[in-house]
Length: 87
Image 1 (cartoon, one colour):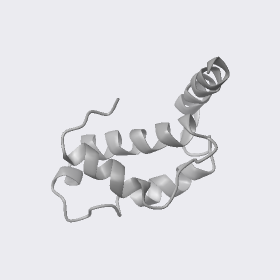
Image 2 (cartoon, helix red, strand yellow):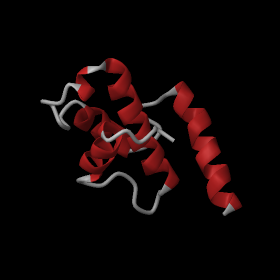
Image 3 (spheres, rainbow, N blue to C red):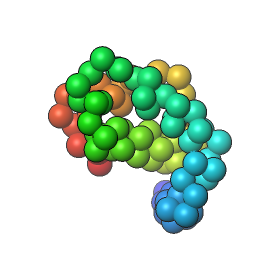
Image 4 (tube, rainbow, N blue to C red):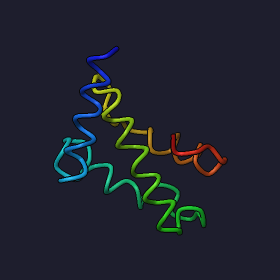
């Protein structure tokens, strides 16, 4: 859907300017990133944490009718630890 793609690109441009306040769910994502799989060495790496946060934000923006929901962090985290790429 071209309207959805335009909205997604618009939000990504704004995200570069003010990442936390672009979307209401971003503050919750920022909190949950460090609380998800805290015992995992994978998430002990700053680069992987940043990638994880980006994935959760992208999902929240790409599916605005759903946004960021409870449990999504564990699914996305598991997929990243399993070798799935950020895209």
